[in-house]
Figure 1 (tube, protein in one colour):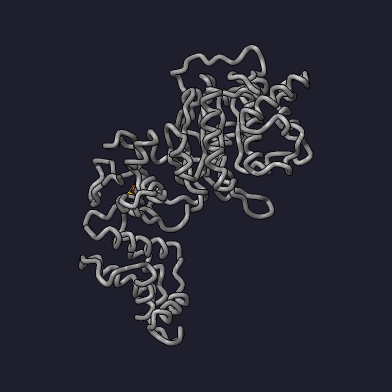
Figure 2 (figure 1 turned 180 degrees about the vertical axis):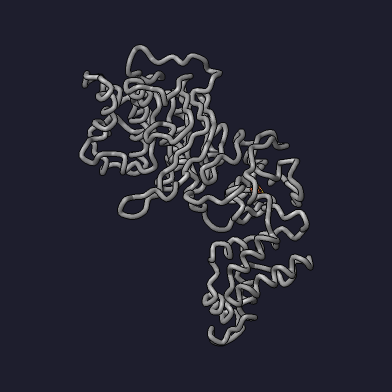
Length: 454
Ligand code: SF4
């Protein structure tokens, strides 16, 4: 049986200087990886996995870092812990610059800032017993008393919902949920102040995810931890985080208190993530916000706002006031044409499927134009003569095989501030900031009324 207080690994627990100061402060953190080519591995570019993010975690606080796969959140975690050297930026931990630490200080930092990984199976050595794995960090940090190591580990195993008997078992004898509990015990064995948990439940069965989340929440309070939770799952973040930072393609695009951010998201990307969370309430308003495509390649991020190739609310050129869905469809065509991602043979086959002809070889330019409208959900008319003229001419260019001319024509006519200018974080009516031109008073023709999803 355990008493209420966790056993500490020493009698001199680290005192934090000021509970009002952030425990962790990340300023302009960057992590870029070189892209190399050829036998000489010549550098031809950079993958900008994390591109200048800043945020804080205060003592006892749980902060969520959320985004789709490819948003850079896991790289942010390993970089801020110096498991890999950041390219630029400052990480301040308990008032000290981690980048300026020497070897001994770095080791002490690693003791106070622990990481829990996504896959509990991969994070255990199959040849070591659970007890050996959990106590290994104590040994590394100089605790030579084996009995004391065992007592600490058994106490922790019980605190994470396992039994002391698990000490002598091996990873293959434990379920995924039990292994993640053991991984939490190992993360806590050095009595850390900060735990960074990277997708801690995403590799587990749905049936045990809620249990592990509740355990993390409980341990956070019991051990007075600061917790940085990395997740792609809005439901997970909603469950236990005090504040949330939303990441997209290496940048933070919105941040705020969890409830505020979920009930009143201020960035179209957050809005789409929130809308995708299933709600049990059948009377809930329609929250469908479609998000097309995947996160683009961080080696060549889009210009301006990195979200503009997918944003449902991408801002129209000043001279237009088109239906927003139609405008998004025009932008989708523009993006595909710019990427040379329009294939006339596939369009001919689509035209056949649409009943335009019996054979792809019999599909003429008019059939390809019809297929293009079908493929990109373009209406017969946009409701603006000038826009319709340019669009029709661009479709003719593509159907005739001159994609470069279509690209130039579309880019000239349908340029948007969202692709030209990189938005900075702006104050919003909801009270928390978001990096989106829709909140910039100086940007014209926003053309879309922001409404709460609630
Ligand atoms: S700046 Fe433009 S593209 Fe980016 S999120 Fe805002 S509206 Fe969408």
